[in-house]
Amino acid sequence: MLKRSWARGKPLSRLGPRRLPAVLVVLAILAILLLGSLPSKAPALPSYSEFEPKLPSSPVKDVPPEKFIPPSQQQPQLPLQQKINKYNGSSWLTDERSLSTTYSSSVTLDDERVLLPPLKARQPIYCYYDTDKKKAKDERDAESELLLTWRRAWWAQGFRPVVLSAAEAMNNSFYDQLQKMTSNSELRRDLMRWLAWDTMDGGILSEFTVLPIVPQQEPLLPFLRTGTFPSLMKWTDLDNAFIVGPKADVHSALQSILKVAHMQEAMSVTTALSDTAVAVNNTSNPLAYYSPKIVETKYAKLIKKDDRAGTLHNLNNLINYHLLVTWQNSFPDGIEVIKPHPEHATAMLAGALELAKSLASCPESPMLSSCPPNLPKCYPCVASPMAVTTLPRLRFRNSPHVFTIGVVPHPWSFALVNNLRESINVTWIVESPRDTWLSAVTQAYLGSGVTSSRRVVRFKELVAGEADSAHSLWLPAEDKIPSDMEWHFGFTIPEKGMDDGKSRSPVPAERLLKDEEPDKAKEIAHEQALLDRAKQVVMMSKSFINRTEMRTSLEAWNMADTEAWRFTRAFNARRFSEREEWEKTYRQR
Image (cartoon, rainbow, N blue to C red):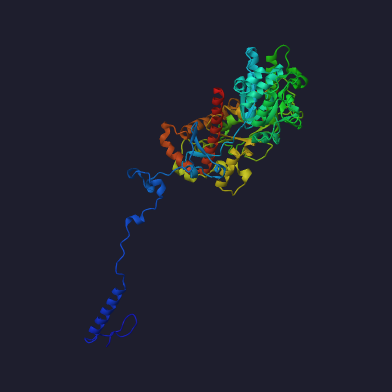
């Protein structure tokens, strides 16, 4: 029986002895034909160099072979080629993308380094002050107080206040011409003021009795911040105490006046110029101007007969009072110290609450019922005290009628204090919800169902955005209240409000620790101890170095909360360092 194939079920054919040679001949012919179709020369095998990365020639051609490092071995480079700024434990880079970037490390390539928006250029504003040695010491001291108030108020509004002196005027090429000119003392003083201004790049020239006491929506300040002035201009109600203009026009004005050898009639530079040389803006009361005439007619109570130093001292107190009242009037709904997690937040919020109460207080003033000269319809704090609120589960609400103070804790500090824990382990971390602080703070503002990435981006806008930051202040929980708050707000913050028997806060349970009930005080003391313990870990104290690895794990679990804390801390550090650097430059002048 024939065997059948298992695959096809057909009988296997057998090759007989006559068929085998024929098959071999056919196979030989096919092999010869196949070899003939191949190229005469086989290609070489690809070399290793063909698999190496193709490097651009320009960066490499001047590098010695022994110093060249392949890209695979090079360290990643920062995409921003700029100086790394550091201050008080924070470091940062600046970039336009900062407020739209969720996590700074994606750009800075460093978990500890934060991306901040570029600092806005501050428009200089100049004030001429003649340090007359003939003045009594107490009078010079009183004028120095007023100069400090003037500088602080304009700095808080985004300007760079600069006090000029006779030294700048004497450096002007026109100074010799002034010495040969015959004029009255008033014009000579004003010419010295303009000579000092001319040595700068033009801009804004102000007396130290002109203050930026204006409503929030006043368009004048944004206009002044631009620094773009097509011609010399003054305001009717400010007389010659406030003038703006480009450098070329300032120079031309001086040149035209100093060509005249004798000028006794004119009392100021603007009156000596032609009517078309200086444009006049008729906007009424654009800034608060405490001229001698206004002080005499509206604030005569300040004047101390035969005591100019005492009068100036009273005026300085009144100006600070008006600056504070105007700020308070900008927020009719008061100040809110947010408290998204109320269980154990008293110690963490104590500094912020104390600051809020100081801002809302009514300090002593020589004229408590008075208003700024340009805002006669204000609401003095003695008649309308500002409220401070810190209710349980109080969260941020984006309202222009309320000023918000927020305390931002590091996730480690928040975990210890909010849960009254002495330590943290991995099991606790992975079983805890993520980014609970930021989610709670923005709950009322952004609602639920919003990602942590969206929340942290919006939070950065609240902290550093030009519009939002005017209505809120965000501070890191581990640091003390910054010492530059008076420069931030632009006025003297009262240390103690006037004792009028009125409560400044509608929440009496949130008093300072010393006023608490014994049981509550004990609880707050425990919170404070845990917060102090957390600070040592957050600030990476060497004695707690073993716990920093757990801290890193907690930060990775709460990336949005960590980014919010780092951004807030770096933003405050930069604000302080900016003013400190400016002060150093100012003192060296």
